[in-house]
Length: 532
Image 1 (cartoon, rainbow, N blue to C red):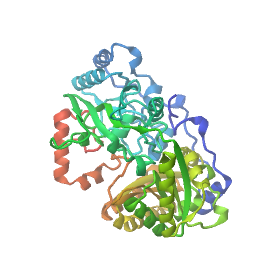
Image 2: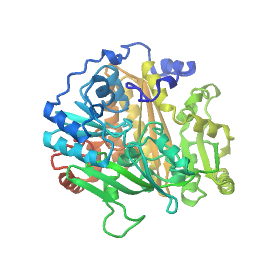
Image 3: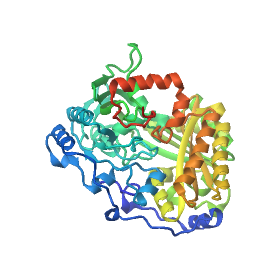
Image 4: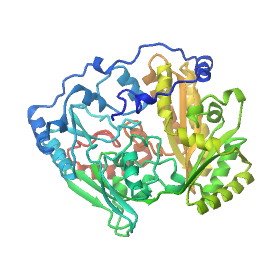
């Protein structure tokens, strides 16, 4: 099943807004329903693709002369237009097809990917690798005029190898996360990677963007799971990862991870796997303030015992109930309730019980109050629902978007205040005062990530409106010492700030790599690095 072309996920799972939330949007933020309804797919005027006959024949030859593997019809091209950020959705809902590919090419092997890249190089076609289409940072819209093709990897969706002695699995990049989990679970294993995009994102996308799942406290980030990668480039194949760790020079795996299709196309990923946990337990803890809760999370992250899932909503997010989308607005009538932490444990019965008891002692010592299993289980039940909620907010006339960052523990309070103030100030000055919510989504021994959700009225030009606020937030992140992105990736939205974060010499080193692997600059131009 394809994802909804002008929204998130399965259209049958649309999340209606509770009346309490509709009233909040109206009374607090001045959101009024109405406006122009989204266009229908059959109403979109898609210009003819600029793919000439020689280029089309070359692409067909690259994929075995199968006509169904080179799509130039309007629907296929629209479904591969941009990603799923709020600006992306607003543009496509308005029928904007300026970033529509000329063709969608669907290879089924590493060799076919190589052949497609060589054909594109001969015909001057830019290439945008396409997995689940879940990018929220402009990672699927090349910043370069001219013809480009979307390289859809959905047919590269096999489990190539499972080494049960070493506990490793080699997966093709087009495997969607649920499919990968099902294949591994049939043999008794799990990857343990469950980001909010889990239901639609792909293994290749996880590697290309340095994804981080909601159980990262226990299983680690995706880049920590990767042991080997194969990369197809216009200049040939790059194989990385002969052993779990090596002292043989700089680790080339780290060059491919997070490269976002700018250096090549990932065609296989070897990852560590773990036995499917016998027990999963999720629970809630209440803290009087975000600072108090943050200190408790830091204690667990640094001194243990570390839970598998560990996250903390600030006062506003807790009050609105965003940590539990299926109970959104339920806390409003109850008044302020401090901050909610969701704590989860996965593993054997004995290990889970031991870590759970130890963590409870730490959380109580840090001022936490046990709220029972219901808040944690409710979060686990609804943890993939927030993107559906965003679609409902857009339908109601509101604007909703997210951004994230990370820093060291000592910098968390300053970064939190700086980003919140930048978003609130910019949007309020523009006449659409926002609701700004935040949670700590991932923890490490030395720091943590902050994940912000912003809801406001759309204003006259919602995209331009958000661009100003996003710019202010990005400036605040760098000024406060945070990284421009923790797990959403760079894309085009963060590119100019990533350049500043990496520094001139770092950028030139990356440019040198790109010139060697992609001398014509055809791979996802303008994503990650400014186009030459």
